[in-house]
Amino acid sequence: MNGQGHDTELDCGMFGFTVPMGLVGWIVFILGIVIFAAGIAIMMPIISAVGILLVGFSTPSELQVKLHNMRKQMRPSEVAWQSEMGGTELVSFWGGERIHRPERDLRSWVFPPPPVQDWHLQNKYSADASGELIAEHPNRIGTPTPPTFSNSGLSILIAYCLLTLQFVMLKNTQEEISRYPILLVVAIIWLVVGFFSWKRLQLMQDTPTSNIRSVAIGNAELVGQVRNGIIEPPMVHVDGDHSKTVSDLVSWNWQYQIEVERRRMVRDSNGNMREEVTRHWRTIRTDKGGVDFTLHDGTGGIMIITDSFRNSKDFGDHLIQWECNHNRNLGNLFGNIFTMFVTNERILRHRWTLWGLKLGDPCYVMAMIKPRTNEQMSHDKQADTTLQNSMVYAVAEKSPGFKPRLEKGTELTAIASSRSPVENIVFPIIGLLIGIVQLVM
Image (cartoon, helix red, strand yellow):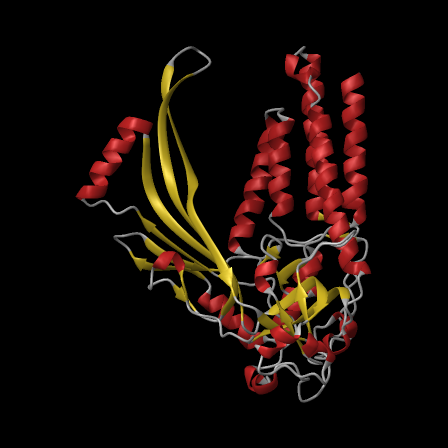
């Protein structure tokens, strides 16, 4: 393996079994094993099914592990800084104020990207000094292939078989619920989700990645680095709070939630009344925004119309999350008492979560390439009629068999969490056949 992206071993082969990568992953993994064993011990396969799902989804994919190891080898200082800055920081013990940042970014660069000092901000559409593609471009390193069998795919199949066993046991005891086509419905949902996942993977693998310098009009797949556009990205104040400020975001969205505790009286199986306490996070308000930016792959830059993508964005894990206890001063205390009397609900905590795409980040785009009008180019002082990529722009526009998308990461990281066609299509079909047999028996 080297900095140019050769010998990266992107084909994950037949089996891709992995172990958790972090403390939370290990906790969920062990919890899943305990739940699975408990279900076996008490002869409740449906409980074991939950446990095996936790085991399967607590582990990363084989490709994600490979990319993480490559990051540590090729960008050790940035990965170490991310790990040190990540985690939960306690700001105020009494107010329960915490700031959480991910310890690892599975959508960050794998190979070292061009540093800011090498960007041609005075002519953002021209090629970099070397004129070569960035090291992580698919035309240099190829397209990765997920393993045929993985932890998550097999865990779903095993969980479905355990659910089937539970229904067989219910049928033997003449339980009425065993007559409903629940397994069939689950299999159909599984197949629909798997089909769209397979279509996404197929589209990414089959669509050739264009070099921005020579990109043609029409549907295109682009990979590059986020750089400055015509307008500099403004500071983002989450929920209007200047203490929650983040800079250099070209596209973002945040969400404000409250944790609500609800108490109600319910009657148990013996006819006795008891108090039931539940907690859940409720979304209060959200916001999103951004500015047009330049996507640069080393050979040239192209304007990306950010707002056109709307709901077809994927930024991966959050950038930062703020959390605090509910303010218990007199005004809020009386408000809580009133709320409890009327709805039996009480506010416990507040949480603000921010996702976004920043300058310098890797970016994967599937979009329609269209020519810029003379009026559009007149507003861009750096527009260069001698460069083909300067006279076009990328916009989210659907066409038959093509769905536009804007994601943080390159094609490597976009495909990293994908499952094989066997797990996306063949496994659900097996589940569908099992559901049909169970229903007619």
